[in-house]
Image 1: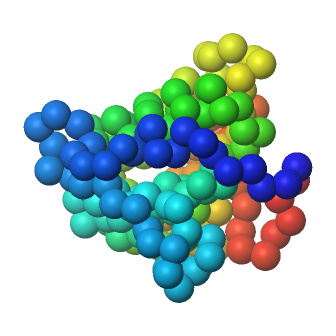
Image 2: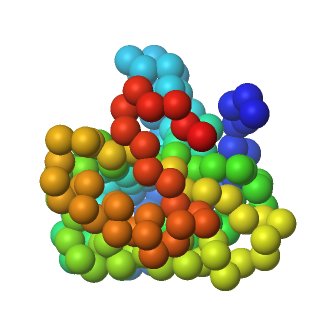
Length: 164
């Protein structure tokens, strides 16, 4: 399947505050961005982390996500999931290679996201494909556990692997 632009990405993020009472702001990545993959993407800052929501069902995490950001991350994940239910991609790629740390509360959000997919209608089901840093022990352990909890909807890959 070729890359399809995710039309709901703007609706997921909007322009401005992420949700009421939140100081997190979503911004558009300008087309003059250094990476063409980032064009048309949105960046959301949560805690000491940056979440980039890309046009081609790609989500990248950078930095550290502590338990204080778990609620905001859940809001982001729910919006992405709702949009995916309408857009119906086969896969959403979640690149966590640059995620330095995720608290237990944040990992629970990833588990919940996988459960939303599993418990949803099968015709709108999609796979969460996590790209991990193979040199990071916590990423290997955490995301392998997530894959074992939801093997029907979670896949792991490392950079350079063919995504199957």
